[in-house]
Length: 236
Image 1 (cartoon, rainbow, N blue to C red):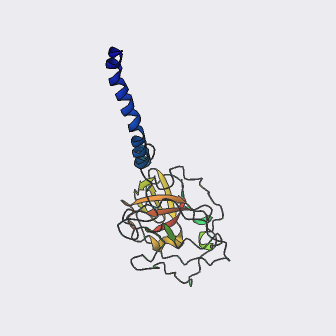
Image 2: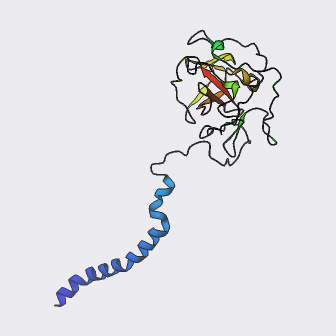
Image 3: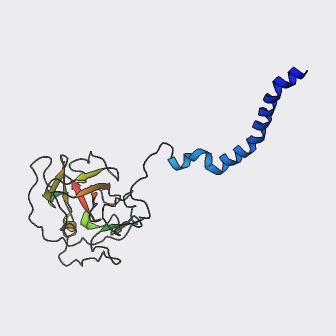
């Protein structure tokens, strides 16, 4: 009997200590959130760019990339076309892809159309832009009836086959509003938007392409440096 007690006493003491420690261990796990899985995001995926609240940086542009494009606008009465700015001569991009589509655009812009003010608060440009603090697409609110973006034959040259949205950034490769390109794809700017891209660097700026939910045949090209955007038509 003495031998039995001498042999099994250490084992009994160890088992008793283990049982007493289990509640404390469970309480610690509960406080710690199960080992930090929530912090890791389930595999360490990077957070999407263009969060609703920007922690720092300028209120517009400065490398900010919207996490999504604009929401569809509300239906409005037929809006008069914006008066396009005179075309600024620009170097032509290499003659590849589809040609321009001036004959495809209906709804000529009246010369007496009043220019809209897009600078809704201090530090914001007087051009359609995205507010980096709210992800709001300022200026994209004229709805589907805006004659400035009417096309007689939407998608005449097909659809853009490259990536669309925040995870696809393209470096401009030359040209100008009437025809510019990157990566073998070519676009032209809506005449009503010529005046909103005078400060774009067509040889070096980074842009992101988004779908336009209101105007068939158009995409939205967003300039990450300036934070402004324009309507563009895919040429091929």
